[in-house]
Structures are given as C-alpha cells and as structure tokens.
Image 1 (tube, rainbow, N blue to C red):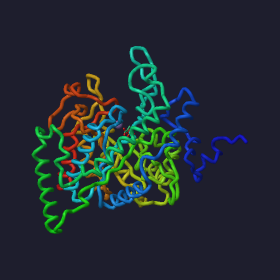
Image 2 (cartoon, rainbow, N blue to C red; image 1 turned 60 degrees about the vertical axis):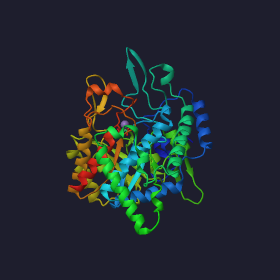
Image 3 (cartoon, helix red, strand yellow; image 1 turned 180 degrees about the horizontal axis):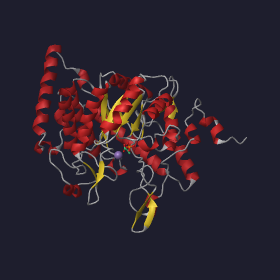
Length: 456
Ligand code: PEP
Ligand code: MN
C-alpha cells in the first residue's frame, strides 16, 4: 500500500514511535554518502549500553518540578560544542570545577538548592546557519559537530561519517564515567571546596570575594556539624546531570529505549535533551521525536517566536501539564528581551501552563569583531540575565535557571568581565570551533552577579 506522508501513521498526532519523526521534515540533518554504512553504525549503536538511567532522569524531572515552584534554581552550562579531543581529564575536571564553584555561589546567595546540569557528555552536534561554507572559491559542507564531521577545511574532513556516532557515544561514556568517579570519590565534597580551585584563581580579581564566601560556607558546615555532633554526610556528594541538543535524530533514536518496570520510552543518551531554535517547528521532526520520550525536555525560544506558537508547543509536548516536563530556554539578546519576552510570559501565564523558564544569555548576544572573531560582550550577557529577572518579576512569573556557554579553561573568547578583555585579546586564547564561551572568571562573575541581583 502506498500511503502518502500525510496519511502515514508516523505523521498522525497520537501515534508515536522512536522513528515517527521520520515522517516529518527533519532540518539540519547531514547527508551521509553511504546509506549502508549509516545503517551499520546505527545497528552498532542500538547494541551499546545507555549512558544514563531512567531513575536518574525521573529524579531530575522531580527537581525541575521543584524549580518550577521556586524551590530550586537550575544552572546549565558547558561548551557550545564538545570536541572529541577535549575528552581529556584536565578539561573535564576544570569544567566540573567551574560549575561546582558557580553552584556554590548560587546556593550560598540564593539560599536554595541548585540543580547542576552540564552541557556535556554528548554535546557533539551543531545546527548551522548555512549547509555549506566557501573559502577562497572552494565550497564544502559546513562543520556540524564532531559526531558528524571534522572542522578542518578539507573534503575528507567535512564528509559526514556515521562511525563518528560510535566515537561520540564512547567519548560521552568516558566523560560521564570520569565525572561520576570524581563526584563519588569526594571531589564535590563541601568540606573541601578548595579542591575545586584552579591554578590561576589566586591572581584573579574575583579571588577575594570568592574566598570570603567559601570561608563562610566552611564556617556554616562546621557550625551545622557541631550542632549535629557528627559529620553531615550528604554534603559529601552532589548530583550532576547531563544535557545536549537533540539534533542528530538517528543517534537519539538509537539510544531511545524501553526500560524494565517503567512505562514508556526514555532517551538514555542524556538526562535532559533540548531542541535548538532552528529545529523547534511545531510540525518538524525534532518536536515529533521529543514529544514521545519521558525525559524532561527543553526548547530554545528565540525573538521571532509568537505567543500562540509557544502555546501550541506546550499542547504537543506537555499535553497533561506534567510538572518538570517542559522548560523554555529564552535567548532573545540584551537589546530585544524587553520587547520580546513579556508577551510570551503573559500568554503562558494566562493559559495557566506549567513550564520552567530559563535564560540563555549567550545566543542572542553573538557578534563578529572587525578582525573576524565571533564573540560576545560580557556586559550584554549580564544585562540579559538581569533583565530576565526583572521581566519575570514584572510578569508575575519566575526565572528558574540560567543556561550558559562556558569552560573551565582560561580562554579569551568573550570580551569584557573583571579583566576587561578587548577585541585584541581574542587572538590570544580563542579555542572554540563554534560559539565563544565565558572563561572561568567570567562565569564566576555571572554567578556572583545573579546573587547580587537577587539580593537587591
Ligand atoms: C546552542 O545552544 O549552541 C545553540 C545553537 O542555540 P540556539 O539553538 O538557541 O541558537
Ligand atoms: Mn552555541
């Protein structure tokens, strides 16, 4: 029987299967040159063990539900894109350290638990604004992230290779394994925040403020333990969750599994997948895919999204108004947020829908310098975070978290901040192959600024 696509079961609203997205337009997908090689890689992937468990996913969903109630705050951060070469102990532990330090600042200042979510252990696929790139008259496919192709500007490097999905799965597993081992081994122990210090902290202009805060947390921990007469054990470890953009749907599908004793399907490649701004169309493949998995999910919301579109997305992605299920990550840009955000907040509030609002203060603030670097100004990032708090307060909604691109490395990719980096500093340590990240100090500074804002 020859069903037209609009009549196929995969395309109807109620039926869902891990592959029903194939009946919808799938944007941002690579064209693999050899379909057989793609099938071989996907068959291998389907055999490999998952990276996370359903009970971790459900625990995170519960915490996100609490964040919706204002009882927790979400800190989500990491690279724009991980590289396979960054799967290395120093890079992983420095990224963990900066996220732990930021979360410590936030816990201390906001007086509420922080949900820590990394953009890592799977953040390997990138949406691009153009399918091809031309240099000196030569046109090649765009770099789409290490899970798809390589950044070098050669035909061989830019050819999508399905075996890269297997490598991405193992690098994600190695990253997760190391993060889990560090955390279980006491790395995140609140008795020893000094373990999280990085070598250059001592000479940072922020060091004094941070050390003062660490000192007062140490005092608080000792005070509590004196009262309790014992060591407070749950300070020894923290929870850490992972997230990535669910962009490369064949990969996501291969890691979508059913779990014994749990009803439904889970994406077991990450705890908290999100859909990017370019693939969030209501009728598109990415929304169709995420509709059916039980993970908590997030959608990026850019300045062109209309209130009605947002409500339709909620209808499709969270029809039962399940707590913790759906987050909207708004990324408007410092200059547009005051115009664009309030109508969205009002519409969702008026409809009584339950979502977690998160501010991505990076992606609306990207610009290019005259010497050809993609950068972001610290002041714009900060302004967008601060405006978000104010606009939510005015609308009677709640900003439940922040989403940032950052690294624990001492890079110079974003300008400004305590060291007042200028456009000329960018060439010194610009390492991102995609978007510019906050460096260690700039990240900590944002965390401190959030706290100052809340204490006003
Ligand atoms: C990203 O998070 O790296 C990204 C591409 O974001 P957006 O989809 O919001 O542009
Ligand atoms: Mn990015």
